[in-house]
Image (cartoon, rainbow, N blue to C red; front, top):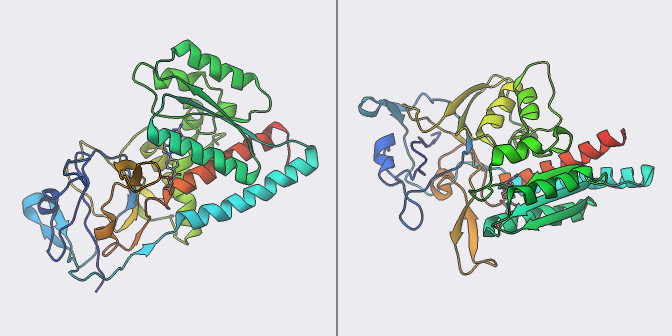
Length: 342
Ligand SMILES: Nc1nc(=O)c2c([nH]1)NC[C@@H]1CN(c3ccc(C(=O)N[C@@H](CCC(=O)O)C(=O)O)cc3)C=[N+]21
């Protein structure tokens, strides 16, 4: 029997599908909880959906329910993002070496961090380590939590004026008092390796145009699919969430690859069915036994989904390393463009 799982999404809550039951959306909904019992708000995982023939309609809740396995057998292919990211990093490393030997230059990445959020510190540290691995020069500007808009813009413009910096990333989220939109507007599209500038986003959305950079997480998701042999053209894909940094660019990128895209968000009335899960969630949970006192978990209840989905990406080891690999790739592309190095 093909086993699939319904992971309907509503109001940003994680779904736990009761095992051994024929779970429909609402019955599963009651068990949606974080590890400490609180419902959690999610950032969007990307999923694809198809309603299989063996699913029964659930008229009470306008959705479908799946035959759910009571065994612990794993049916999902687990996509190893870390492994794929390592392959990509190896290629980037040799390109950086070729550039250094050819023209004596290396790509440079600058990261601006405001405040001391524990998760941001981890991501930035991972980005710096990845730069070092492939030979990209990296710089960090660490600004205090209470820094002013002018201090932040000052850091931005000095990196902007530095010709050895080919990519600038402002680590998000920023503290409340700083306006993300205004800050990102100031970053020139040519160094916007996150691809968040409206010009890059607009060009991503329009046919016949090419953005200078594609946002790293969406690009990493697509790259992971392509390298896992998943054909995207003609498939139905559902993106859960519509944030500027993940949901929106992911839906645009899927359309570029000729998928039929639906976008599900807090106002969506009908829950969705998901068989193929790419989990973009990064939720820090307390874990005294981990090195930094916490560990990352995704948005999807992995232990349950892995038994019934057709494919899934884990957290950690899925989208995170791919995001970093794409950041390195964008920085390399930027330097190649600046030096006209092919
Ligand atoms: N301007 C900006 N650009 C971003 O790309 C950006 C951002 N802001 N803000 C936060 C999110 C999140 N993000 C991650 C990067 C690496 C891991 C990562 O390395 N994850 C590892 C392990 C993490 C760990 O060591 O705990 C993994 O999943 O295997 C995760 C998440 C980038 N983001």
